Image (cartoon, rainbow, N blue to C red; front, side):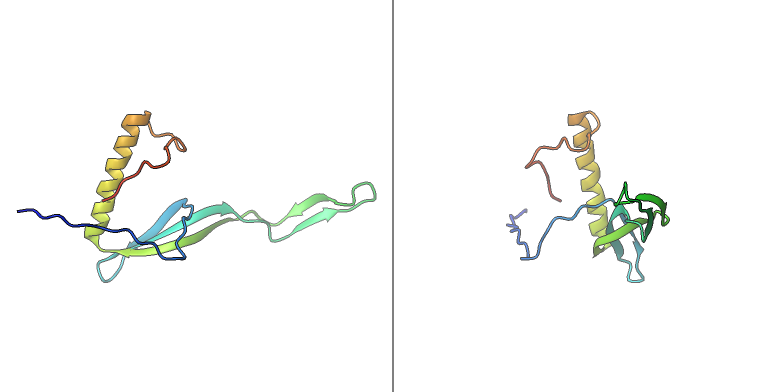
Amino acid sequence: MSKRLRFEWHYPEDFSHKPVSGIYGGLLPSGDLLLEFFLERMAPPEYEIREISESNPGGKPVEFAEQKVVRTVQCGMVANLQSVRSFHEWLGHTLRQIDAQKGGGIRGEKKTGEGGYL
């Protein structure tokens, strides 16, 4: 015998979408999985040296600090393995649907309102 269950979506006042470039994490001693989502970007240089002249008062750059890549952790989550398996199944299913509909799922093609849930 099956029964129906109603799910309601509630968002905290400080909810916001975050851009994500990647994910880092691993298995915790509890057996749960740590998932830390990060945004990857080029860091501005720590310094630059410019050659200033009367004809170029803004200066010509002559030396920069080493370029660095910064990974800013946007949020972290802890999930049990059953939930992670569900995420994996849902993501795989969603990607297969996108590939079938879009011929490979080119980034930015998704129409507003398309989505799904576990």
